[in-house]
Image (tube, rainbow, N blue to C red; front, side, top):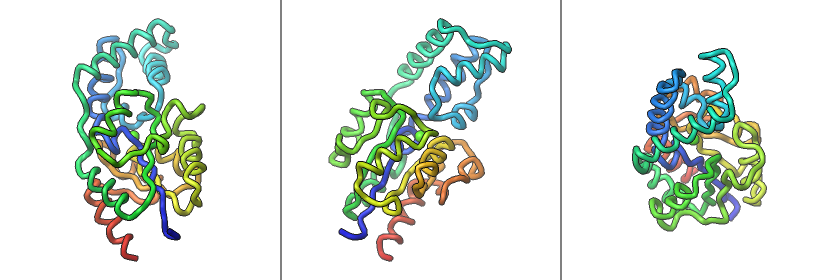
Length: 222
Ligand code: CA
């Protein structure tokens, strides 16, 4: 099919509504350690490693680097808190977006910096018959995570399509930067608390998955 496309979906904040719980867990655990990390900090830094956000918060609060023990302790407390908050639900209307893309015969990929097996496995139960394990780029597949272009470049290479045929769906500034650095078209969907300005490096910004779906439906008939 000559007009085939490949859609590269980010996971947290695009497929799973996991960001609110990440923000709560980070804010509370950092506070308990006398560090400041707001929900906005969490959304702006989405995609960075836990170690790097802990080190930056420590520099800001105490003007020194965090010790390896502090990093391990804070990160394990944050992970435990996050898991206590329960499983994330699907982002509203993203299932309809996936079904539409699939019905058009396009490739569907997941490109995530996450290495959480449980989340990756639950993609299949939450969105049955959509994803193919051969079309997933996770933390296990790359050396450099977002905002490095490597994850999206890897997906593009494996798709066998031209860059013009590939579209990245992202919700976070660092993910958008990664997709653009890979030379791809990036659609941002604002599923969290950021402003449109925060996402303005994307080619298009949508306020919801429903809005993205309407746009994709008009594209399908061009
Ligand atoms: Ca994301």
